[in-house]
Structure formats: C-alpha cells, structure tokens
Amino acid sequence: MFSPEPRRHPVLPGPPRLRPGRRRRLLALAGLVAGCLILLREPLALALGLVPVVGGGRVRQLRVVQPVDRAGAPVPEAEPAPAPRDAGAGQAAHSLRVVTYNIRYGRGLDGVVDLERLARTVSDLAPDIVVLQEVDRNNPRSGLVDQAQWLGRRLGMAVAYGPNLNLGWTQYGNAILSRFPILEAENAALPGRWEPRGLLRATVELPGGDRLAVYTTHLGLQRQERAHQVAALLALLPAGSPLVLAGDFNSRPDEPWLQAVADRLVDAHAVAGDGPGYTFPSGAPSARIDHVFVSEPFSVTAAGPVVSDASDHLPVVADLVLPRGTAGQE
Image (cartoon, rainbow, N blue to C red):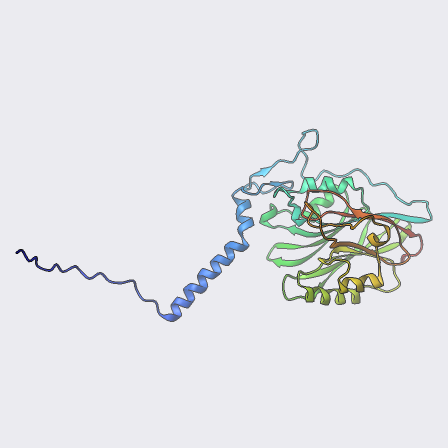
C-alpha cells in the first residue's frame, strides 16, 4: 500500500500585530476620516455635480444650472429689483409687510439649490422687511455664494448678515433684508451646547426718520436649549421701543418658552391669522414653528404662511401698521 510522505507546507507569516497604542491611533484616524466624509457629503455631491445649484453660479468647477425667467430668458446673477414704492409716505402710520423665511440655504423640495427661485418667491410677496434663517456664505454645498448679499442685490434691498457658525471663510447664519436703509446691525450669541445660535438685530430707518429695531433668530433643536435661548433673547430686547421679532423658533405656540415670548409681545398669527398656520414641513405642513412677534403700538392686519416649494419651511407674511412718531428718532 502506498504511503505518501507527508508534505510540508511552508509556514506563511501572519498579519503583523499592531501595538495597542498604534491600533487606537489608527481607529481614531479612521473615525475622523468617516466623520469628515459625513460632514462633507453635501459639498462633495455638489463638487461632483450630483446636487445642481441654480443662481449665483460663479464657481466654474460646479455644474451649475443657468437660471432662467418665466419666459425662458437667462437671468443675471443678481438682477436688481425695481425701485421700491414709498409705502406710508404722507400718511399717519407706516404700513409694513414683514416676511420670515427659513430658506435652508436655497435648497428646495426637489433637492436643487436655486437662489433665483427663492428670490422670485420672496419678490412675489412684495415685502418691506425680510428675515431669513439658514443662510450660507461661501459654502461649497451652495456654490460658494454669499447668499445674503446675492439676494440683497437681486431684490434691491439693504442687507445685514449674522453668522453663527464660522468654519474658516465658510459661514452660516441669519440675515435681515430691508427696502429701507439699515443704519446698524449687531449679532449676539445665544447659549447652547450644540449648533451655535444667535440673535441678529438691525436698526431700520423708516420714511420720515422713524427707527425700528428688527430681530431674527433660529433656535436650537433641544427643548432645554431653546428654553435657555429664549430667556437670553428676552433679556436682550429693549423695553418701550417698537420692535419686530421673527424667525424659526423650532417651537410650537403652546411650548412654555414661546408662551414667555407671547406674554411680552404680540403673536401676529394669533391675532390676525386664519387656521392653524402650519409652516413646517413645507410639503405637508403639520407644525407652526416659524413666528412673527411685534411689540406695542403695532397692530396686525393679516398674517399667515404662503405655499412654496423653495425650502422645507413655508414663508410667513405679516402685515403691520405702526403709528408715525412712535419709533425712536435722532
């Protein structure tokens, strides 16, 4: 019987063993790379042309869709709006239309970043003052455009920008646009452990020299965080002067910290709106989290959201009346 000689296979070396310290460093590096890829997923998608950007297409390496008007003609990067009307001139009161809008950096329900569509949405509302949240400046995900300035030029409005998140030359925050002159602006940080939040104030000069303080904010996502932010916000508001406070509060009207705001100011929708006034999400609104508040002696004649697909929030419009001579003058 044949007995084959046992064959000796060469012993192959196993995988090199990593020292515990080196293994930890490699795992930390892998986690860092994965985290960076998650944070940069939208900029990378833009750079590869997977998320089209419309409007403000100054970045040549992105495949930018050229905006066109309703007739199909190309739209310039920032086409100036017509000269504004002088609302309230010669009258006993200022009639003002205020709009608050979380624009999600111009990204609509179709996933397209389209500043021209957003500009048309705002322009069609014929506002005097617009407060915006989630506004990018020099961010790859939105085409490296200074969105507040672009919209200001496109709409023919003065601009104040309050960045809350600063990543080098990339910023993200709130903006105030006004067809009246903006005399000064200030951005105050609000408390919070997560995404930085702020309260942007602009002093607007109304016809006849009256001055109006306009505030906008975008509160945090955590309940306790919002409670602290509202307390800080209320402490920053002046007493006895007409003001407008509007923005994305991420809060329904019945939440206690928003009740604290309503105890001091007038909720425009509560006194002049119809129905529930839901503002989010724009595709199927089920919550009113975007609000306009005003102080005395404002009166509110109309208020409510307007249907739009230019963002994941709906814009909210409030028509206000302010007696002349009741705002500060110098």
